[in-house]
Image 1 (tube, rainbow, N blue to C red):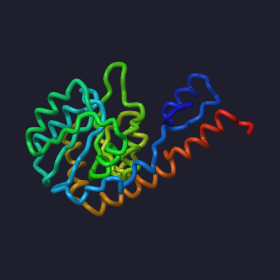
Image 2: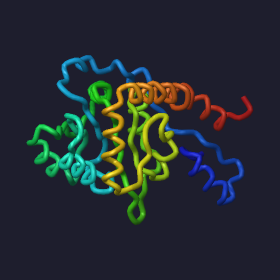
Image 3: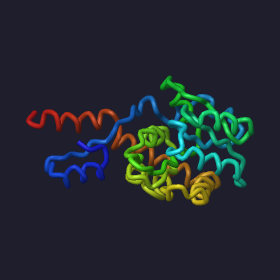
Image 4: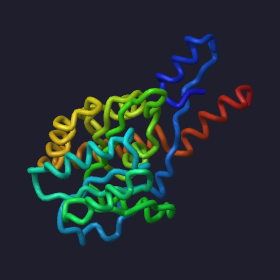
Length: 222
């Protein structure tokens, strides 16, 4: 079983003719657009990153975008912990960067997604590692957020460029900034992408949907 079509095809190429694609799942009842009850209290749009704060996740790239930002007023919010936590914390002394640290409570995490406007996953491949799926992407989808993600093998397959978000080249900070700004300055397009993302989450990644797929794999004769 491969969590992406790319992974599944790789397994087939290795000789597993019965390879099946079953993606990771998301709780669409918990992660939903109305999970953030304090959305109306925000004073500006929010661009959110959720994940381990480390170099290969593109944290430095996104921080650089925040430092050089000359678009509309916005807060770049980082949720997570890791080797670059102190760097993010220091950057959060400015109004443009927010730091939430690690959030283990799923209800709180769902609220942080839902009180965002754009989700960003700027990961890039390094020797021995690449973003092979990106569960945060489908959590953001379920929360009704358009995603700006790099063309790592996982996010590139998950995000339909121009439909549920934008796929950008790895390490290209200019394009990353441009796509974020496009979404923030076009309310209609951003809302439409968010609705499509939510529909994809319900149709493709909901736990009940993937449970049926797993049942077909584990008990094929029933």
